[in-house]
Length: 148
Image 1 (cartoon, rainbow, N blue to C red):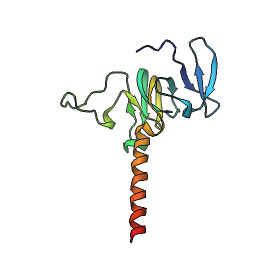
Image 2: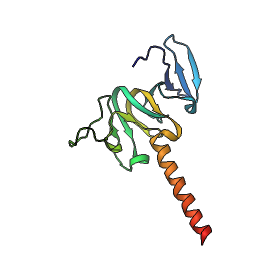
Image 3: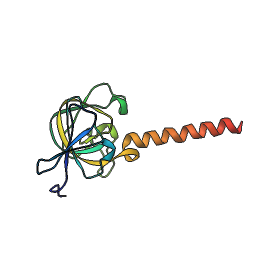
Image 4: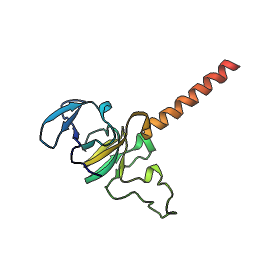
């Protein structure tokens, strides 16, 4: 995978936009909803993660995932390949809460900084999938009330 022409994006400290840094040093602002898979994003303490991101570089990175997983402690993140912490069958998917190489949209950077590649945006993110499931349940509940 080559990142030679991909932009690097980081949150602008004075706005809710993201600053886009090209390899040539030009800066352009983009909104989080303009990100696409393959974009490189940078984030630091206090930033909200703008999309689901596969980490490629971190320094003391800890992310508060309580809004997604319910865990109260910030999770340490690193760019190493995600693996089960307590061992598991090879080929099994790593549970959401144990994915130390992924930063999730909407979670908060509590400490450190990181860089990663956008792997999912909008409804394709873990938050988006959960939101869609909740919408489906609401529709089923509303249909059940209408049928009564």
